[in-house]
Length: 249
Image 1 (cartoon, rainbow, N blue to C red):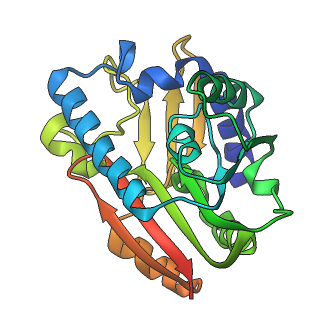
Image 2 (cartoon, helix red, strand yellow; image 1 turned 135 degrees about the horizontal axis):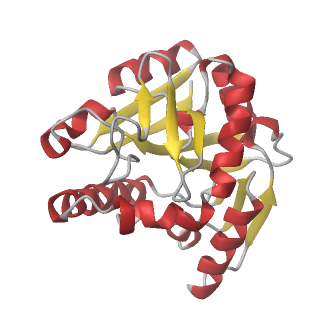
């Protein structure tokens, strides 16, 4: 994998995907895979939301790769201050509109910044990110987590969520495929490469992009983070979601 080119393609993909991202999250349109899938997706998303509430993202909170704001809303209702960064100004604009419509825009700062180039100028009690860890290539993994550690105030904590390993979806999909794959995908449609840590994604207009997509099992993730000096607890829902809480040792 050419990390530099793949990361650049990934940035462009998520900027261009902004108008359809929420259709994926809500399992609508071309991402609607039927009532069984949709019901399980929503049920498991609620489980992760409850885990975040139990974690308590309070105080000064930093959201990395905030995207279109589906999780920003949950943070904004609990944080004293919230800083949201994302490299896509298009996504941040949609994020901002959602938060304003919900009446939660107080004490939120938006920064159009590439996560890989971000250097925190303040420290935070909580760092949160959703569907981002899987987009960090191995060559940037340690550098990314060093930045997160610099962003944390003493006693600070991290909560992250992401896609579970795709083989967990077998009971619903009947095949180990990426939950981002569109419902009408064929062998020529969206594809993942578990060995290479990449995925090919297709937008509604047919354009294709190659992005980083590296899945984690809880036990592997806990061990990897221990090597970097983090205490982690990691979990999976039945089919779709991976989440973890971390603190520096």
